Amino acid sequence: MTITAIVIVLVSALAHAGWNLFGKKVSPSGAFFWYSTLWGALLTLPVLVYYRPLLHELDSGIWCLVVATGFFQATYLSFLAAAYRHGELSVVYPLARSSPLLILLVGTLFLGTAETITAAAVAGIILIVAGCIILPMHRFRDFRLTNYRNLATLFALLAAASTAGYSLVDDNATDQMRDLLDGIALDGEVAFVFVILQAWSALIWLSLGLILQATERRLLTELVSNWRSTMAAGVLILGTYVLVVWAMAYADDVSYVVAFRQVSIPIGVALGWYFLEEPLHAPKLFGVLTILAGLLLVVLG
Image (cartoon, rainbow, N blue to C red; front, side, top):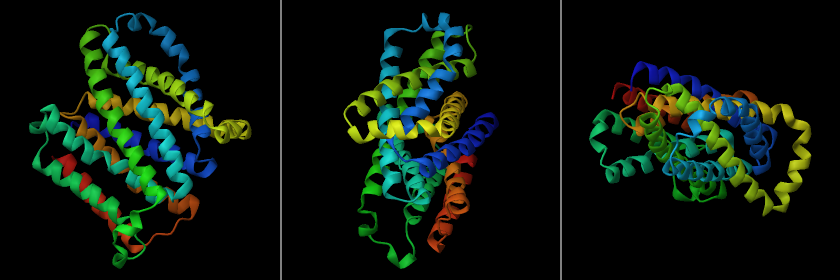
């Protein structure tokens, strides 16, 4: 990763932990993330109109990837909301953020890009995932499989699978867009336009999900008064991912960006402790230190 990518991801990590705090504190629900996605899409609509000429340059393959990334983003937000309803921010957040790393590592083997990932980076990724496995424990002697056999862990892992899905799709799609729009748009502009398209695609998928869930439709009415929180989360969600997609242009492999994004995990643990008064057990602190060591190896790698 270049210094540019590291700085971009650091800023996005802080914002990412922030909107997860909003989601957990206000209402961990699909309805909350529907409003957040709606705000993000509406507020950036003028940007999409401004860049309308670029949209005419996109081929059918890229539009198919936009549909796919919207699906993965919608399922990610839905599973994340379900995980937060059943567990703590400082436990669910690390599991949901770190697990995609293993999926992406396996994915690189099938995509033939494994040679771009150094041994130091692989060791760092393993440390990050190990730290996240330790985090949910209250005591070190509690390390056993039964502690992870719960709905919070299940939904966090499903959210993680969706994260891996949209990360691979987005890396591929923006690579194609940069090639297609070479000389027409800068890397940052490509990232911004693509993430806005992703937001509209995700909004459609989330809307389909709400149609099938009476409880979520009822929550839509209840959350109208919380428009400030949903708007703030929407701006942070979209802004955060614009930075991530932009950073992908400065890394040898998407796994580096996704790995370094895990700096948001210690931030999420700190926010959960400070704002939600979640306890800091010894394993949680040790897990955070292990994650930080892994992040250092990823940067050095």
